Image: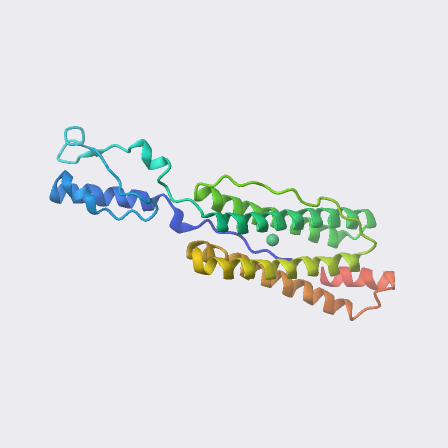
Length: 234
Ligand SMILES: [Fe+2]
């Protein structure tokens, strides 16, 4: 099963802002309050206007008070094209999540014990992917809109589930590639963020590809052989 885990983007760490503030303090120490004009603030569109209280810091260290604008409208937000792509992929991740939930339920009912555990884990993994997309959007000051998606699937057998899972993962690999290609020109930061999704989708496609190849080793119409497949490969 695909098990790629999302890492929170380190470059989004608040240390960026801390660094800017520390640089501002150093600058003020060296050049006086006028020296703050040259601060490099990668996440803020407009230059910061930082008031300096020369009396409150003690020992020559000025206190820098954050203006309300630091947390407001001048922060970088994702552009509409990026939001559209990420929201579409968010829907796909939830669709995959519910597909695997339904698959796990079907397998539990059929008493395919290993396949049940396999698809339950898949369902959780997809939720993690959805959360990663939403966290990224929130990190760039966008509250995600969660799209409506299909929540119910009906199956006739384990082979059908695996064939459909392969189709879903392959389709999502193509879509992450297409989203990334589109955003390469307009939003390189999000393009980089999506790299882990592209890699993860490739691994998922290969995984189900392997399962489909393994199914070719048995008679898919023979229940006992499908059970052997499930015990051996899942
Ligand atoms: Fe996923």
